[in-house]
Length: 285
Image 1: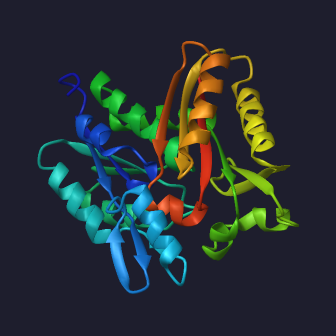
Image 2 (image 1 turned 120 degrees about the vertical axis):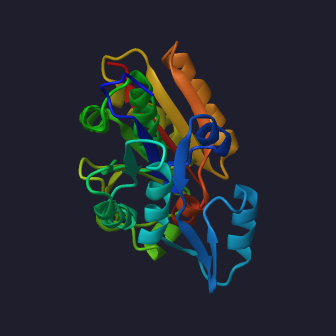
């Protein structure tokens, strides 16, 4: 992996990157899953399909909760990988949104500087962009330190918008932060939020009805692109495939030659969003 002078490294992330299983298996990305909990029953993120999860959530008397991986889960992953590579670069959901990064950092302390933990200050597709770039950096022969410097630049450029049918799950899950003052009357209102430079949720807009909300999402994406005419886009959804496909088609028309992919979010993200859509944007250099 890489040149003889560069140290080889493996890439680790967590399940909130929402990278499809076949993709992370093909690219040798190690995923440490979070947990989704229905009452006393705890299961790994990815155990249920999206349809199964929403059916289970609808039938449950209380909303599911989520929890971060243990320090031990990260230690086990790092130890296994460090038997075959020199170092590990471990990239995770924003520390403002989850304790996952803390678990990873505590685990990394056991490996004498061989495990490098990076705060994406993002989630889902925004996190996935950084994970995929780290894989590319490893193939190019970059060192972990040079890779992290490159990831810092990508972190500054990645933008993410998420649209909600209801903020109930986000409120009850305690991840609302600055968005709480933005609630008001929710009758047929769709709320969009983004992730600020520190990795916390920040309100964007309230729009009335689905059509207006999706149009607003596309305009926001165009604004983030600025003068760039191409880029990479991940359109993500929680039980909202039709809306995601419409967004994908609109983005592909506006930004020809760009990479536009549609992914489903996993159970942990969906537990906080309910039915929702999102777009992660990475403008070309």
